[in-house]
Length: 125
Image 1 (cartoon, one colour):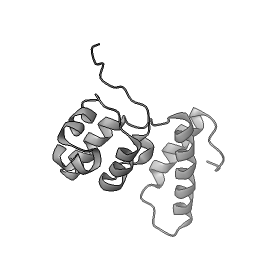
Image 2 (image 1 turned 180 degrees about the vertical axis):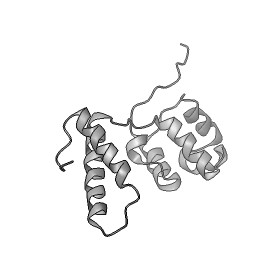
Image 3 (image 1 turned 90 degrees about the vertical axis):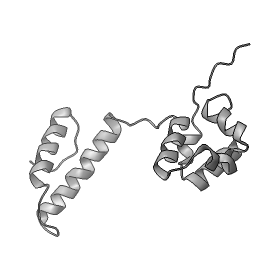
């Protein structure tokens, strides 16, 4: 297969097949260079044709809490009181800019995830 841009689904499938064949090549070889180039082309094609949406901000907070072993109490310095943590995690209160900054700094949640709009709980009138 000649290396060229991946424009069609068939091109994409062919590149994936060749990557599979080259997967265990020795480093610092022409085959490794070919693998690197094909991988870059596939990544660009996938980014354009199969975009991955960012996760919901509240779900992301839960995920980061779980992976770091944090409890709701650990979020208090980022969000405020225990009641405020509960309101945010139950979607009754939206994240403020200050909360987003602290969550990004303390918990490591990417700001681009936290600034997205998200569904909040419907509070009866």
